[in-house]
Image (cartoon, rainbow, N blue to C red; front, side, top):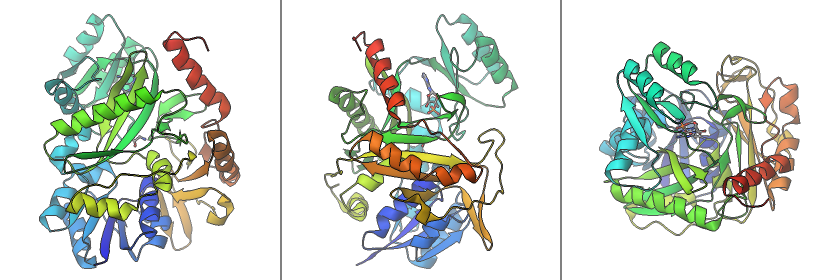
Length: 431
Ligand code: AMP
Ligand code: GLY
């Protein structure tokens, strides 16, 4: 029987999922809060609806006769969309709201790691009282990281000693309306992501990716949802050893073993420190942008992975040994003061050899418009990171003229070399 797959979500990550499913034997439908022209163009049907209203998603799933659903973003997971789909008899690839707490509640996430003695957990404390949290900052003899417990779209965390002083952090806490925060040890090193397909207690990991959260070149400016990312033609990244990658995988495996029931992607964000990988956070879904690096090099049929998650054993995954570089074009002023409602004149043909993924844009009768978030991404795929970067950057010349902003430095040799030198330095090795 052919499968009918409903894809929930309309970002660049979901366009990449749609592209991957379009190559398999599935009838694809999409729904999202705004109309993503990339997904709509690949799907047999596309509906704009509030993806955090489980009944709305279930109604559309039933209307199209979905047998499977892939839930892309975290907000529908938190709202219980996977629970509602499962209750309606549609298999969701994405965890139930309870299991998604590993992402949606950072206080729970840290306590879960401590309770199950999972490796790589930084020291931390949680606070409901912001006054107490401020005292804890005063009493600490090392730099801390301030994390709102709930979802903030990647924009709520503040690193003392890097982004702000202790005094500014206390001011941030006092002014915030966060009900609960985590204060944890500041980890120093290089960040990387490992995403794993998880079902029936099994874990299949994908190659490591490095995202770039800061808004501006040279890792300056505020945190964003992610401005771009790269992966190498290997499981590990140039600043890592195979051992580092394996250590990250075993942390993911320990976590899955401790989770009761988990289906979907478990995304581990790690800091590679001088002592090895430590957990920055877990997410309950593919990364965005990281999915755009990973899915285009996945050689195993993605639909087979989804049906196996539902029906039995996950297949071993095969990946093309190719490097990838992904770069986002974002509205001017993003993330603090994004220029929403600007017309985006992008011709997919102009991407050349790169893949183009639409993200938070809205397709209307007279064209495609920006929203308050990232507009579109391009991905270069080649034998080396350097070549992949050139392909991606070449595809973005039109973005500069369209008034969008890009971090051209992502994936360039200088930046990758700096990451390697940073790790060598931390590990006390000669460069
Ligand atoms: P998160 O939303 O938890 O991914 O945090 C956003 C960003 O804050 C991460 O990508 C890191 O750059 C930084 N961050 C979070 N936790 C820590 C930590 N314990 N030490 C250093 N940086 C951190
Ligand atoms: N790239 C970061 C995230 O998806 O949360």
